[in-house]
Length: 322
Image 1 (cartoon, rainbow, N blue to C red):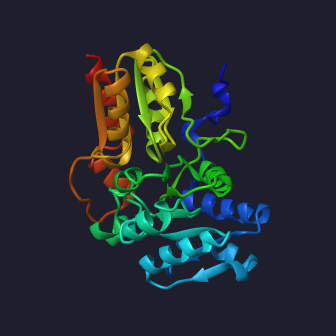
Image 2: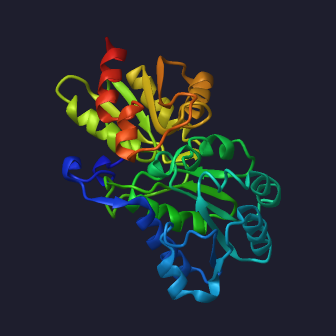
């Protein structure tokens, strides 16, 4: 029997807000202490990806590659083939957005042990404009054979996920975002690649989310608790998908909403639709970016404008149950 209290802090409304990238910076330091083969490569974004401490602690295991993401991926593949565990770092719009071919051919085709970090995903680069925002990275990575795809929910889970992917043998893509977001998982919350977490039990509807949308899902469920019993699942691993947990949940609730800071085409919503289409078809609604690019603005304001707030989730839940 799962202890659901392990997954969630007591008061989500007053959760401490910490950038997910802070957890990544701490996680790669811990991974490097455990394994002397862990190295970091970055494309001119050391500060943005919180790698200053790693650079200071392990200067001989840190490479500033400049703005050449494609070359960086190829170098990492060679390092992995030589026994290193390279972490390749840049914004998600460039990594894997710009070096997808090198990821596919140099890394995944030979199953080289490279860890790809896509920072500032979704609306994370809000004020820098549309070309700096990535809503396609989950879709273009999960389609590549041999590649694990991870999207942690908060800073604490990003720390644990970083350690886990360092220990995993094989290529991994992990997306993180920039803004300070509520930390909803505790230090004792377990993390296992490929194992979704039921953050809140319910019987009326399933709300499956990833990344920053997990907090919005939990808030929506809490706000509706006197009217609707919502089951909230944190699908932190997009590939391999936890088929068992999803099917078990929708067998109970009979309907599902997915939520992601990503396009509804090919991301979490697409992956869940594929799973349930084969195993347990139920009424489904996908929340995310609807086949369009973003725009410049504050990340929080953009989440609300594009219908990714907890309030919008509440409306969709009630509409689906009506």
